[in-house]
Image (cartoon, rainbow, N blue to C red; front, top):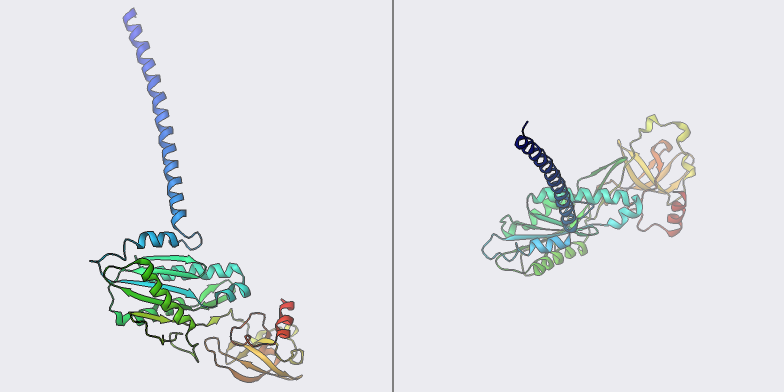
Length: 324
C-alpha cells in the first residue's frame, strides 16, 4: 500500500467515526425533543381538563366557549348548566369514593348526550355545556327532560346501585352574545329548578316543571330522589341465627323491609315478639305505606333515606350513627 492510499484509508475511517458520533447525538436530541413534547402535551391537558372526570375544566370552558357563543352567523347555541341534587348527602352517607363514582358517571353520561359538543365540569357537582345543534326554543324542555332522565339512571356500585337526579337549566342563545351572560341565563334556570316544588309522587322523568317565566327561552327540570344500595337477600334463605327478633327493634329504628319480592327502606312504628309495624316507601317514590312484617322480612338499615329520615328524632339518628 503506497502512502497516498494509506492516508485515504485513515481519512475514511475518521469520517466514519465522526459520522457515527453526530448520528448518536441527533438520535439523543430527537428522543429528548419527543420527551419534551409529551411533557408539554401532558401539562397542557392538565391545565385544561378536570383530573377526576376527564372533562374540560371551567377555564377551558370559558376559553373555548368564547369562540362559540359570539358567532353571529352560526346556529343557535344551547347553554346547559346542571347540578346534582343532594350530592352532599351521597358523600356523607356513602363516602367520597362513591361520590367520585357518581361524578365520573355523570360526566360520561353528559358527554355522551352532548356528542362532539363542549362540556365541562365547573367544580364540585356542577357541570356545564355548550351545544351547537340547532333546536327550536319550544323543544328545550323536552331536551332538559331527556338529559335529566339519562342522568337519573342507576349507577352500578360494588354492592348495588345508586341513582342521583340532577337539576338542569337550559337557555338558547342566538346571534351575537356574551358567554358570561349565556351561562348566567342557564344558571338561573337551573336554580329555579332546584328551588322549585318537589315531586309529590313518582314521575316518569323524575322532574318538575319550571313555574317562573324568565323572558327568554329556557328550560328547568329537577328530580330530588336518591336511590340507595338495596339488599339482595332472599328472606326464605336467611340463616335463622342472623335474624333479629322483631321485639329487638324500637320505634323510629331504620330498617329494610321485604314485601312483594323487593326490599324497601322503612321506619319501625311499633314492635311485638311476633311482628313489627313499619312505615316504608318504594325506592322510586316519595309516598309512604304501612305494613306489618315478621322478623325474616326485616333488616336493620344504616343508610340514610332522604325521605324517611329527614324528620327523624335526633336521638334516633345519634343512636344509629353510633352503631355504624
